[in-house]
Amino acid sequence: MMPLAHAGASMLAAFLASLVESVEALTVVLAVGTVRGWRSALTGTGLGIVSLLILIVVLGPALARVPLGDLQFVVGVMLILFGLRWLRKAILRASGVIALHDEAAAFASASETLRDSGARRTGLDLIAVATAYKTVMLEGLEVVFIVIAVGAAGGLLGPASFGAAMALAIVIALGLIIHRPIARLPENTLKFAVGILLSAFGTFWTGEGIGATWPGGDWSILVLIAAFFAVASTTIVWCRSQRQKPTRPTFSR
Image (cartoon, rainbow, N blue to C red; front, side, top):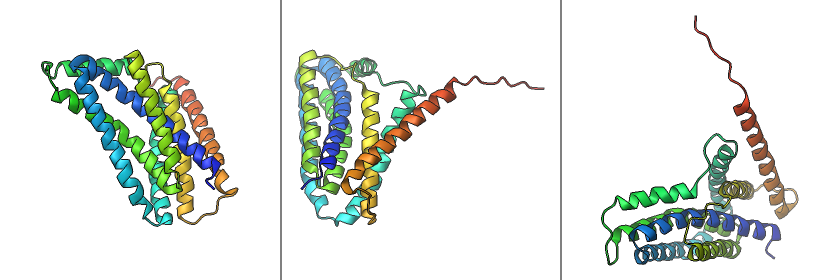
């Protein structure tokens, strides 16, 4: 029987990661459609989604042939690195060290770049198709990695794929309804959550890969999630306190 803790956490990680990346991709696709034409934007988007689905279909079963212990170790280490990258950026943004991501500003920047790319064509615009395709692929590859890594290492490809597909469907529906960037999404909070989930999964799979026995078995993933959350939250508080400390003036003789 599939561990409930793993299934729920893997679905949540894939959902949140897909939600963040889909929103970022939607911003560029909206800019492409507005500036260069919707036919070309949707064509590039469709080609990108199909390419990502092919990657999942091909790579998922292929990874299943790798010995489970080796797969868990390799995937675990990669998930730790991947998750800590998301978590590090989220911590720096939450503590005010770097600016929060602004979808409205990203939309304006992408629109300006597309306007400078040449005159808009009446037929299929190759610049627009290529821009939409590249954006969907770049943003989607991170989601594909998460879905395949979590799914292949723990036999959870179904829940992870379902979570990613659900997030993609929500973002597509919102894009069709509002026709503007989703600027109010708490993106940094979502990235913070994804970073914690991926880091916890990575730690668990790495331990499984080297033959470690986790106390509490599969439910220890929840303890790892709580531990990463506590450390990350404490780090944010510490970073904020360091930024608020007054700097001492230095005098040269």
